[in-house]
Image 1 (cartoon, rainbow, N blue to C red):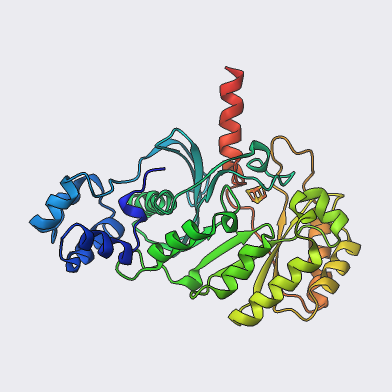
Image 2 (image 1 turned 60 degrees about the vertical axis):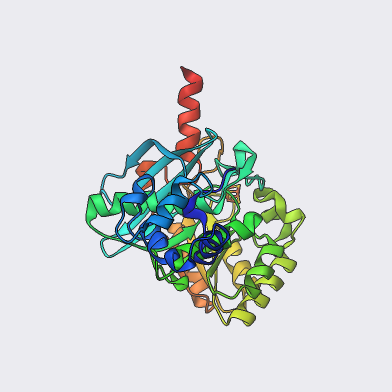
Length: 354
Ligand code: SF4
C-alpha cells in the first residue's frame, strides 16, 4: 500500500524533508499539523507551514493523507461506545472502536485486514488473512476516533489498544511505528503506559516486544489451561504451545519489569468450570500477572454460549483466592457487536442476503 503522511514518524519526516532539500527544522509544524490538529488535505493552509514545505507538499514527492472512508458506524445505547467500519484505499475494510467513559476514552485499532490466526470464536479469524495494515492506516484509525471523540464529547483519546482485527505482533514493525507516532509528544502524546498490545500468543513478537525500547502493556489471550483445550480454540497453539508461551511471557515480564495481562474468554460449558479456574491459577503461579475474564460475546459463526453469572463469579473467586488478581470485563458495547470483526461480518452477511 502507498505510504501516507500520517504514517511518517518524526524522524522519518525529518529525513524526507532533508532528502528533498528542505531544512528539517520544518518537520515540527508539519508533524504537529498532521498529528495534533489532524489536518491532511488542507495542510498547506495550516499555520507555520512555510513556502519551502508547501512546495514539497505540492511536488508529488510528499506522501498524501491516508484514504479512510467511513462506511458504517454504530453507537451503543449509552453513547460511550461507537464502532466504525472504515474503507481503505484498496477497498479493504477494517474496524475501529471508541470505548470507555468520560475522562478515559480508549481507541481499539485494527492491525491487519482479516487475520491468519483463525481463532474459532472470532469473526475476523473466520474471514482469513488479506494483508497487513501500514503504520499510516493504523494512525489514521486513531485520528478518526479522536476526531469523532472531539465532536461528540469534546474529549481526547487517553488510551490505545491494539485489539481490533488482526494479530498485531504478526505485523510488528508497522505497529511499532504507528505506536511511536501516537506516543510522540509533538502529536497526540498518548503515553506508552496507556497503550496495550493484545496477542493470541505470537512468541517471536513477544520476545521482540520485550527488547523494544518502549514499554507497552502486553495482553495475552489464553482461554485454555492445557495445549489440548487451548488448541481447540486457538489453532496457533500447535505452533506456539502453552509452556513456550508462558516462558516468553515470563521473559517479557522480567526484562520490562512489567505485569502481563491475560485474557480468558469464558465460554459456557467449555472453559468456565471451577476445575478450569484452579488449573489456570496453577499455570500462572509466581508470575506478575493479571487476568481479564471476558464472558463470551456470542458471534455469528461460533456456536459457543455465554457463561452463567454464577460460573463467572465462582471462576473469579477461585483465581482470586489463589492470589491471582482479576477483573471481569464489563460487556460495554455488546449492543454494537463489539467483538472484533463482528460489524464487518454482519455487514457481509447483509450484503450476501441482498
Ligand atoms: S482473536 Fe485476534 S488473533 Fe484470533 S483470529 Fe481474531 S483477530 Fe486474529
